[in-house]
Image 1 (cartoon, rainbow, N blue to C red):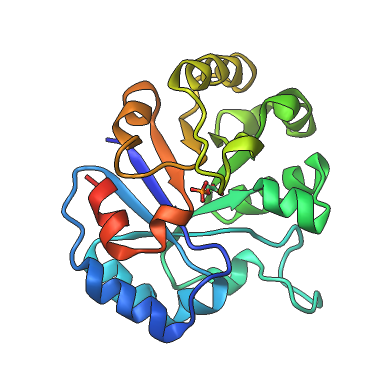
Image 2 (tube, rainbow, N blue to C red):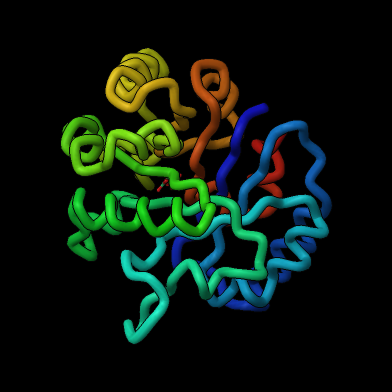
Length: 217
Ligand code: PGA
């Protein structure tokens, strides 16, 4: 079984999300199709999404437990919505919000405490530093997404050869974890990436239901 993540990022309002679900219809795949809506949409659509056969995830998670942390979304806030995955340390979080390897490590800890599967995003340069910020015992509990900056949202996907090399590096450092690739994945190139890894993380091509359906085979 492969894992296909659709990351809507901060796109879509409630109507747009509901339309998308209608257009997509039922999940018809042996793979796990994971939807990552914005936090507010998650609450509004999780039942419909689950009924359609999607698994749910979040795009981030507070590094704090529940408490007086205005604006943050903790693992407790997600309870009752059958969330399985938390994408952590996406390059957009690191770049626009200043997240460090240590911040991501704190989030991994919160995710694991809450029984969520952390999907740690890395580019080549910080595979080692990110792993070093994690406890040894946490490494094998993560899924790792190779997300080369040059390929995210650019239409310039990384070559499969290179992805294979980086997957091997990740496994050297993290152990036998599941590895997925993200960066300009679309219905035409998805098969190549599924052949060499455990799945894909899709941004732009997940925004259109028909396009995401075409690659969620
Ligand atoms: P993209 O985004 O598919 O638009 O390149 C991928 C990602 O940010 O994970």
